[in-house]
Every structure is written in structure tokens, then in C-alpha cells.
Image 1 (cartoon, one colour):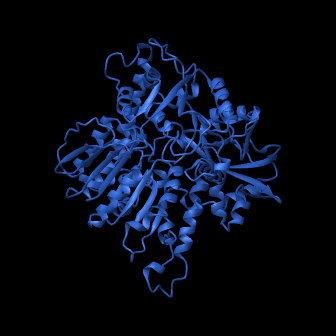
Image 2 (cartoon, one colour):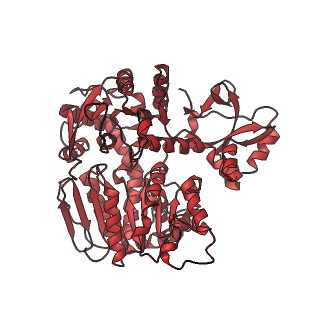
Image 3 (cartoon, helix red, strand yellow):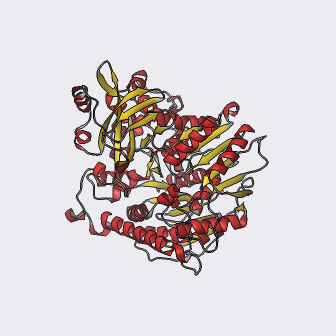
Length: 614
């Protein structure tokens, strides 16, 4: 192992064991006294929750037998995860008598309540799992940023899915690597689909933190392990694990109707099928279409109240995870992008809307992920709903066929290149096709890579990305300039976003009426688990774009009860326009939220979530 802080970049196939490799490398650094712990940063709460479950059974092996390390889950809703709550409770157990032998200590994951009660303190734990946002806040001008930096300093920073960040977050990540290197920390970056240019940028950022000159990375091998220090760089081509190379057939489908038929046929044959849509509205429409054909899918997206989302997340892992119930594995999961990263899920057939190449490959990584004795389909197949990538596409090439996709992924030329290359091959052979597919899709410089009709929209998307990166550059701290008052507003971290919102979001706090009292939607669930009223309100939250949520007036006669309910919130939530009380009335298929006059009612239920319509 080279001396000094190390940046390791591990690029390998989905399901190859990158996390395990990162843990092994982190353990070596800790065993050599070069780190005191680690923090694993994930892109979303769902992926952080899943990783917490994986590490809670194994993290003690990183330390000697006499050490009782703490393990925390760090994100805005960590306290709602029952496994993390159990870890806090385990730490509160009576140990006044001590243990004669360290091996007699209780084996549960544990976390001191003092660490758990505040996201900033959570980074002080010896092992942390959380969203990347918790680490990024250490390089933004927020109050107590130094506490977060202190928590990360001396730890191995592991960042999963580093390809998944937009231009704004990518700039923040580079600042984080610069800070971490300057403070003497090592980092490990993981990805299955990392463009070479992004790897170069991240390496340059780390070396700049070491005050070392930039150095050119040259290898285009795949899988690839790259080690970067202030003195040298090594790039090592690796052989894929013997059972991972495979060929995934790729089939283009013209529209959602064709996808529906293929999904139904596979489901009726007893297959485990995933249908990934690029918007929540399209996912709800797909689930409703399946229900009309007699198939009840599991629907998983971000527009469920937290109490329901956590339940759906556990159901998805129970049925389609590595230890899923084989007797209930057959069926359909309809989901949005929440399933494409870090979740260990395994399907026989996967259907998806067109998306950028790296994300399509990530989704394909959920196909035939684990060895199984029998599958009801002959081989792994990726069905992609996409317009035909004709040589001369029209300006509305993607928008006419998939308007939701066009709204989410703003560069139509990137989508066109993805469709052109992946359908031309008809088969994705891994690992040999990985690097060529990714590099070709993200090459917008070579002549012919941007069709003339798509050039304007592609230019707009590129300009917006540069603008967002510029905003991030203005927001992040400069480690060489120290803490300056003019560096930012130094507000609370809840007021300083780590992610740039193109559309302002609001958080609806769903409520119901019980005996003329307005209570949180999740209140009965919290009572069963002995939770508090503040936890019940947090479990009742669902977020949506502000422009799609009309005013939610309090039903007549409940004004005083609504005020009493709001009085239970914290001062910041009461005063913020981002938090809205939404009192629901019971309906035939769930609940409805009364909306402003002339805008109709907003349905909500545990099957489909919040339905905002057109």
C-alpha cells in the first residue's frame, strides 16, 4: 500500500462485490493505523438504509475483539429506520456489570443516543452509513461544518455510485475530496459506469488537496482499480469474477403498451419482473394498467408517505432481494429510479424507459444478479421503451414518444446516442462492452455525435450543467482560504441545500381526523412501535413539486384542531412555507386531500401513493 493519503477508484460490474472490496481496503488502512474508521456515502436514503442493514452484521470485523465500535445511520430520516432505532436501544442496555470476556458483549449493532440525535454528531461515530449529503455539508458554509469535517477526518471515505451525481453535486464532491485529502484522509470511490473524464476530474481534485500536480490517467481497461497518492498513480486491469461475464439481450419496444404486454406474459409465466419508469406519474399509470389486466404489482417510488415508503422498501427487499422469499418471488415491481443504484435486487426480466447509457447499464445490472437453479425465462433480457434512433431525428424525437423522460433527462442527444449504440449491438456483453458503450454515449465532441435537430436542446442542457457547476463552485468552501465570513451565509444545514432544485419542493404532512382531533397519518403506526408524536409527523411526510400541489385548505370546522396539530411541530417547520399540513378525508380507495376551489381533490393511498394527476 503506498504511503500517505490514498484515493482508490474501483470500477467493476454491478454485483461484483465492489462494496466488499472497499471494506477490505478500508480494513487494511485501519489495520496499518492510517484510519480510525470509515464513512460510507450513498446517493439516496433507500440505498443508505439498505447498506446499513448489510454493514450492521459485519462492521465489527473491522476492529479488534476488545473494541466496541459505534455504527450510525446518517440522513434526514435515519431515526425512522427500525434497525437503527434498535441499534440505539441496544446501546442503552444495562452494562453496569460489564463482561468478563469481550466475546460475551452483546452482538447487536449499537450507537450512542448522543451521536444519533444529531446528524452532525453522527459523523463522529467510528462507522457511519449515510447519504452523500451528510458528507457534502462539511464543505459548505453551514454552521458547525467543522464538526462534520472533524468527524470525517481520519476516516476512510467510501462513496458509492460516483457516476450518479449531477453537475452541481459533482462539483461539491470534488471539493469534498480536496478537503479530505488535505486533512490526511483516504477515500474509495465505487462505480460500474464511470466515464474516464469523470475519473480524471476526481483524481485531480484529490491530488490538489495534497498540493500535488495533476497527472494524466491513461488506462481504458475494465474492470479497473486505480490507486492515486501524492507521489504516484497506478492503474491495474482486473479480471472479472468468473460468474459475472454474460450477455444480456437488448430489445427495443415502441411504447408503454408494448411493454405492458411483455411484462404480463413474463409475469404469467412466474417470472420476477421489474418495470422501471422515469417519472412517478408514469410509474403509477403502469401500475394501474397492470391492475386492470388482473396483475397486482408492487409499486415503489418517492411519492409515498415515509411510513408507507419504508414498508414498500422492506417488501421489495423481502421479495426480490438476495435472500428473497422464493415462494413469493414471482410478480412485478413497478418502480422509478429508486431501484437502479446500490439496492441488491434480482429479476428475471427487466423493462425500462430509455435513459442515459450509464443508468441503463445500472438497471440491467438487476438482471440475473444471483445464481438460481431455475428461472422461467431462457436468458437475461433488457426491454427498452424508446423511439427508433433514426439517423436524422426530429427536434421532438424523445419528447413526442416519452414526454416524462424528456422532462427528466434534458439532453436528447445523449439519449439518442444511447439508443443508437445499444440497439445497434442488440446484446450487451460484459465486461468488454462496458467502457465502449459509456464513452461513446458521453462523447459529444466527435462530429456526428449531436444531430443537428437536437443540437439546440443539447446545448441548453450543457449550458445548464455548466451553470449549476458554477453555482456549486461559488457555494463550496475553499480549504486554502480558511473560514471567512464572506464565504456564505453560514446558516443552518437545513437551509443550505446539497442538491440544486430546479423545481421548488414542498413537504406535505399528511393528517387524519380522529375524534375531532387532527393527528398524523402515521399516528397509529407510531403507537404500535411506541414512537413519539414528532416521529409520527416525520413518518407522515411526502414531498412533491410545489407547482403541482394546489393549496390544501383545512376542512371547515377543523381550524382550531389544525392549529393544535401544527403546534406540535418544531418552530422551523411551523414558520417554513415548505411544510404544508394536508388533512385527509377517508375515501373508497384510501384518502383524499381537499384542495383549493376548482382544483379538485388529491388522492392518496398505500398502493399508489400521492396521485397528482396531470
